[in-house]
Length: 420
Image 1 (cartoon, helix red, strand yellow):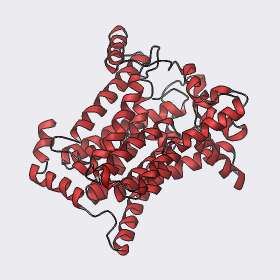
Image 2 (cartoon, helix red, strand yellow):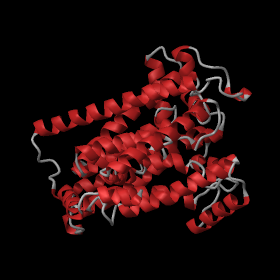
Image 3 (cartoon, helix red, strand yellow):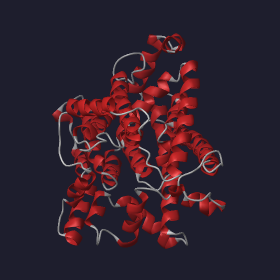
Image 4 (tube, helix red, strand yellow):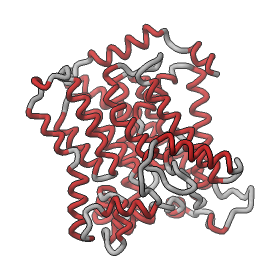
């Protein structure tokens, strides 16, 4: 298969020229008509991908209860109607977000592990509509998913071209854990804010970028890492010269604003500004270690388990995903699918984001828990995959494999089994 992909690959000079062109494009000098046309194209591409995904999720949710096997009691009854199909997605971490949206961070301090922007939006939607809290959460996630797809298409199109943008958005939603982009989790909101911030950095809109970084930080602690991308791209655009730094660098002060405001709120309501860090101990994230130590521990757990055991499967999948993300990030810098200098700032965010769960693992039988889900935020990896999709062989194999596996994940999730 590798040989076939390489055989279909564009000539190296063509790829390099495309990456170089992305570096040379002006940031904000295009005519307004051209910019508007580009956004319309991204809106169409994102909307088509989003609608197709929702249709597949709906079909798979109903198929999950086909009488082909004896289902465990916790799988529940087959859904009836749209409301029943939606309720089948009320699983796992959703049970944390909904109480926060309803009553805030009291009386359970463990709620502090879940950052506030997503439940705040859920509460706002519930307040202005007749929706239940859960249905409001689903609506926020579904709309944030659409925004993320549109923004990713626009970013990939400007860095590469429209065809790569289409593939990047499609490959993202097709990824096996893409279901979390429409589930009542904060994943799609965080991705939309992150990609929006990264896009504004590329355009040199530093205040907008800083604001979106701050909002991303109010969604997940990982949002702080966007500051690395901000600093890298800001200095790169000034040829790494301190003398060329201007007053707009102060926009970087907005990056930690979301986390700081959350800490102040927790201090007021719980008397502990760092409760969001302390709460992580409940999920066995209570210490840091070298990444190779974590990888060694995961390999040991895999070797001592049986391949049919769910924990062994999860450890294997997350280990492959973690290592695979590092390989894709390396390919974003060197090789035939590299993104060019204009895409390096994306790696400044994605690399530490993917290493964070490795250096701060879950200290139990499942060290790399949820890495498979966190991969959705690894934007440059999907751009590299989009480049690889220039091969007809890869473009046929990846969607079939990814969508098929995601179908299994959706069935597993709605039947109330853990995925990630």
